Length: 196
Image 1 (tube, rainbow, N blue to C red):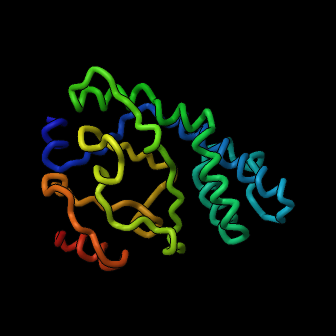
Image 2 (spheres, one colour):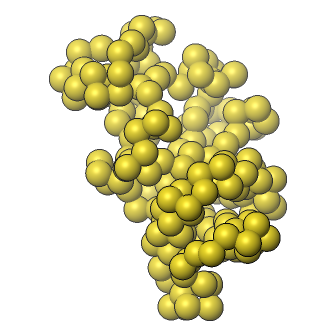
């Protein structure tokens, strides 16, 4: 049943992947790296320090707040953080989560999963930053090897429509490569109306 839903809609929400501790570890490392970058560059900030985090239960909110502050102080250092994050062992552990890959293998009826090394990354989407917002796109023309694969999107912070969540056009994978032109507002309107 799961694979038929995936085949019909083109996406699947996996809520039971055992990845939460890996996400926390990566967020802790990301937060530490952010503070280190700004301290090394002697940029004054009012970031929340890890020692202030209440038993690390709200690390997601702390990172979200600290990145928002960092963007307002020095956007280029946040870009450095983005590039640096892909080399963190905690990021690599996150994207190689065996539970996630086991579920993907079962979904695709594949003996093994692979990760396209050039297709691995992290997005930092902030609601107030339209300049860097991702335009509407289809994953399979965007990522090498995705015609016969899946793209896993792991949400590191709570997302809503207002904070930069994603929109999915169910079934659009069956339409082939689509022409997605226009600005972000036009694309979102077309997506919401189902007019692809």
